[in-house]
Length: 160
Image (cartoon, rainbow, N blue to C red; front, side):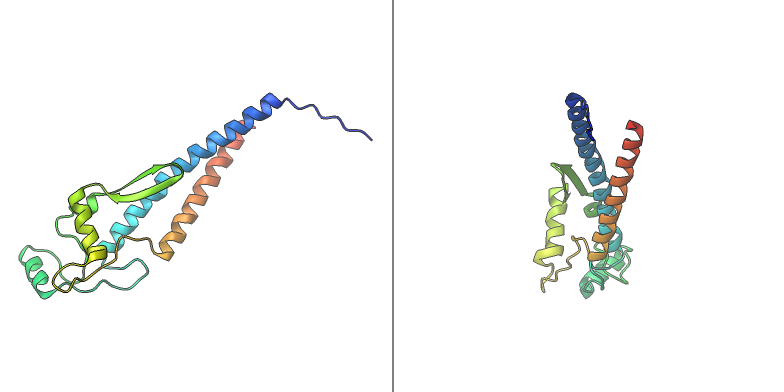
């Protein structure tokens, strides 16, 4: 028994290029989607006084509590929010199949680094908020996978 197959290599090459281009496009859109999700997760979690992998942040110093009360801010838990400028500055950029979260305003980035890494106040208290927790990472991965495969399935259906 003999089977003959006629393949138009130009069409196959074009299809493979189309698939590759679509994958790049879907990955870029997916990264933007989950990067925005990560920014919102960090902001919401931090403003609730929680750390990335659970637990609460170290409490404010008594002098900070007094100052916050005077300005009408809540003092029940640490939310790292006074004017809101730091979290409004939290942004992302995508490119080259990766995404980077950062603080767009240099002054806000400096404040965030003190809270997150270097420590604030006389006791140099750190509150490492600028991270993705394990559960958050799982949600981000699941959302990216869901989005990617949904978009690729829809594209394949259009092509067939």
